Image 1 (cartoon, rainbow, N blue to C red):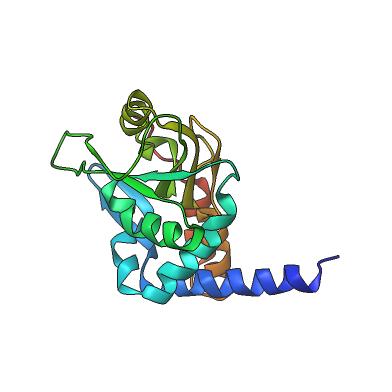
Image 2: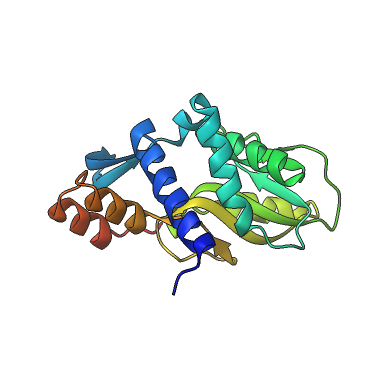
Length: 196
């Protein structure tokens, strides 16, 4: 039987999902990604425009951090989420200066050899896992022991990974309140990313 705190968490998570949908961070429909069509669109670039939602995101994500890590690592697209998480957790953030237009993996931030590190991603999924960044971080002495993302697209990752939400859970919540048809929910639940 759920406890009062479990019910409060469920209510908070449902409100959080609703906020993600209302802000357009998660959208459902038919979206073209190059040659592929996906039944959803994730717009994490909008997250810094909603400071309260960014703070909530960090607070939900903090439960995914293993106790032994002392650094956070991210790509530039995850920097707002990682900084918010760093402020909530007190952990320093190291980020890659790599963008879609550059091949450099140069790291920015204070670090030295031996720090156990969690990789922060907006969304967790095998096809989006930055193996090159992890390899580079390990070459300069960071030990990437886990990954954390706000939303899990799939459960495959080369390191232990955690996310407070799955795409399927968000789709179910949207369906429950009438914001997503059964057909759209089924499309989301059966969608699989292309693995590169």
